[in-house]
Structures are given as structure tokens and as C-alpha cells.
Image 1 (cartoon, rainbow, N blue to C red):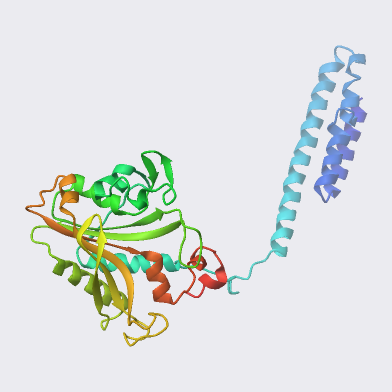
Image 2 (tube, rainbow, N blue to C red):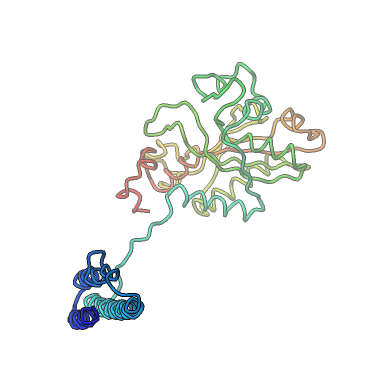
Length: 339
């Protein structure tokens, strides 16, 4: 049995030294150390030995096992190193070669104009306020002096969630929330998404964006509204831009007006874009109704204010000469990459 163990050790040494890959090494491990391997077969005969021979042969068998296991471990380390070297040689990277260029995206046209509007009003001392898009009927209509039978409150025009909860139709509720918590002076704009039950076409969408502004302080007049919006228009469309105020009616402002800007394509001379009028309507506004101030706990005998609201999509379409609002939401890269 001693001769058998010496032969197993010698055969294992010769075989393992010649092995070149992991598969051959695994096969050698099974051949010598597996359940049916050569060393295991010898150990099964230990019962035939005398009591004096058994510990001697057992010690020799353990030495042979340890020797073979070490050879296998060393061979495995050697094979792994050789495979890694071969892999690295195959995957050599030339760090002097230029990298693969990655196309970087940019702002959406809505974000471009919104950021510009924010910068203009921040420069005039306004803060930016926000509020929930799922709103109470009180903030969206009632606190804004809109009667229960006002057409805007019709279920055909508004997305109601419950009888008293809806998707906001304007960002005006933010103004109410601000006036409830912050007493004058107040100077904010409130941009955000709004929802109305409109059929999708070139100029309408059930989801769009509004930017509303509010100023409340002592001695605020219509002249302050005109001056603010004139500054805004000049910053957005150029120093030669003029504005025009036309009488209108809104339940939350009194007096109210529609505000037009001189056509930035023809300079006010008249063209197809402005339909020959020389002006384009961009927003509505007016002096905050005394009832709205009183509802928010502000004394209309001491304070006054102005408010205005404009559609972001309308500004974007005018600025970039886009004739179909749906292009802003189609996610067509061919369109968006122009900006």
C-alpha cells in the first residue's frame, strides 16, 4: 500500500505539472481526490492493515493528500494568472484614442422660457411660490370670488375628484394660500401645471402651464401693474416692445384688463401672426378684488394689489414661432433638438 501511495503522488505530480487549463485541472482533482479517485480507493483498504501499520499508512496518506491539494492550488493560481494575462492582452486599451462622444440633452422649450420668466421676475424682487395640483374647491373658486353658478365650475370644464376637490384649473389658489399665511407686503409669481377639460387641438390641451403673479401692499395702483408688465414684456421680447391694456372682466380682479404686446414679428405694423392688429394678447390681469383680500384676512381699506396670469405654452409658441401646441408634448426629438 505504501508503494501505491508513492505511485499516486508521482503520477499526480507529473500530470498536474503538464496541465494548461481549468478543465484539465478539475479532471485531475477528480482522478486523484474524488469519491472514486485513486487515493480514496487506497484508503478504503485501510481495514486490511494491522494495528501497527494503520497509523503509519494513514499518516502517509494524509501527506500525499496534502501534497496533491497544494499542487492543485498552485496550478489553479498559475492558470488564473495566465488566463488574466491573455485577457488583458486581448483587451488592451489605447488611452490616447479619443473617447466615444455621448449626446447630451438640453432644456425643453417650456423650461427654457419658464426659466427666463422666473429670472425676469426674480430680478424685480418677486418670490416664487408653489401649491398643490389637487386643490379644494374653496381655494380654486370660492375664495377667488367665483359664484357657484360660474361657468368655470361646470363639471364639463373641470376635472372633479370629489364634490369639493378637483385638479386645479389655474395657479390662482397659490395666491390665496400665500395671502392666508403671509401678510403684506406680498410679491410672488406662481408657475405650475393646471388642468381643464379641453379637447386636444393646436391651441388647447387638458394639461398646460400657467404663471400667475400677485403684488399686495399699501398704495398699489393699476399703474404699478402696467409698469411691471411693461418691464416684463421688454425683457422677454426686446426693448422696443409696447403693451396695451384692454378692459375686461374677471371675478377676482376689479378693474380687470387683457394685456397685449406689440407683435414681435412685425414690430406692430400688422402681419399674419397678429392678424393685422399689430398686437398679440398674452395675459390677463387687474387689481385684486377687495372681497378676495378680505377673504384672506387682508383689510382692503389699507391694502391694495394687482394680479395677472399668463399661459406658458402661449409664450413659448410666440417666442419660437410654433403653430401647434401638441408639438411641445409629442416628445419628438426631431422637433425638440431645434431649441
